[in-house]
Image 1 (cartoon, helix red, strand yellow):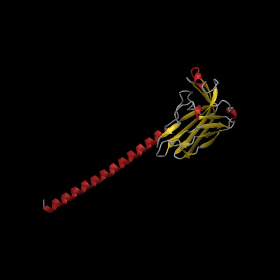
Image 2: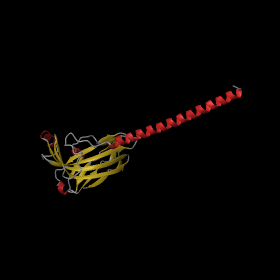
Image 3: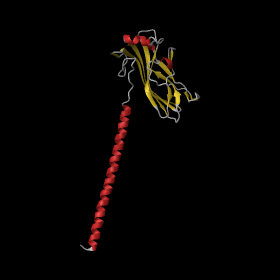
Image 4: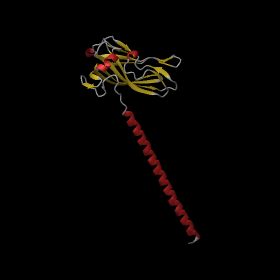
Length: 224
C-alpha cells in the first residue's frame, strides 16, 4: 500500500473512533439524565407517601375522613365528629408551618388506657382535637417553637400545648434545615362538639437559644 493509502486508512480509523466516542458520550449523558430523573421521582414519591401515624395512646383514625364514621381496635373506639382539610402554610421567619388537617373525634379508650387519660380529664369518654402538621426551620440557626401553643374553640374553651397527649416531641428546639412532621392531641372538656363550628390555633413565638423573641406567633382559624 502506498504511503498516501496508509494516511487515508489512519484518518478513516480516527474518524470512526471519534464518532464512537461521541456516541458513547451522548449515551452516558442520556443515561445519567434518566438516572437523575428516576432518583428525583423516587424522592418525590417517598415524600408523598409520608403519612401521619396513629398514636400509641389512641385508636387509629388515619383512615377516617367521613363524619360519624367509627373505627375500633385494641385501644378503644373512635368516631369522627368534625373534619377540615386545611393544607395551609404559614411563615414566621425562619419557621415554615403547614397545618395539614384537623379532626375532632369522640374517643372511648380501652380499659387499660383510662388511667392514662385521667391525668387529662375526669371523663371515661371524651372528644379531642387532633392537629396534623409539618414544621421546617428555613434558617441557619437553631430556634425554639411550639406549633400549637394553644387551641381555642368558638365556645370559649382554651387548651394549651401542655395538655397535648400525643407526645410526639414537636415542641421545642428545631435545628437548621430540620423538618418535623406529626400530630398533637388535645382533649376538650367544656365544648359541645356537635355544635362546634370553628377553632383557632395559635403557635408560640419563635425564640433563639438566648430565649430572645425573633418572630411573632402564627394564628389560623379552622372552619368545620
